[in-house]
Image (cartoon, rainbow, N blue to C red; front, side):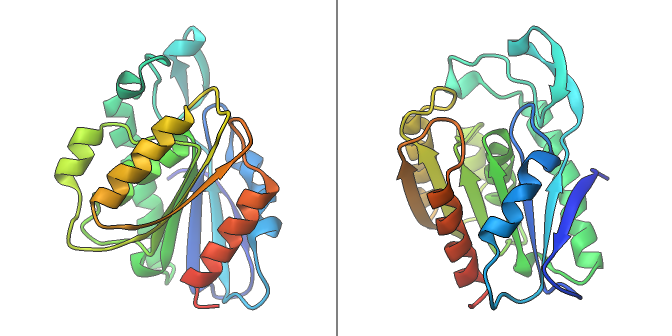
Length: 220
């Protein structure tokens, strides 16, 4: 089971949000956003910020760091992700989702979110699940294994999806994020898209928009 930082807005959470960090970061790096997205009037929510495993990353000379999968080619967005690593991280996140169900929060009340690498895991996992989640959040990311994911996607459900990207992102081009959004829309999902004048990061306006989107999911 992945270790994670947890934050609960109240007792007996009725909803859960799992947010996956980006390359070289950790759950500790994203946990401070919790107070910026939580809104008054929310039902009790458990927010989880898991830590990716430490492993070698090819584009960084094999240096070991927290990573959801190996990145073998930064320049080619279609060849960037290690498929085996993506699938392994998906299984690890599935274990967290199963534990939330055991703790009383079913998949229908769980939002899966991610930034950059974490967003890639979110999309590849969330779009293919037989049992749909309550929604997906993909920030500053792209859709790896696009052909496979689209072929294996669950087309029997419509998910709310929040996506946002920096116009000046040097790590994951804005166009790659837009293409991912179009892929998600092609599956019939309801995508809320935001662009911001930023690089590979999150900004206050984005977190405000995410908080409002989550409020709508929670019926507030």
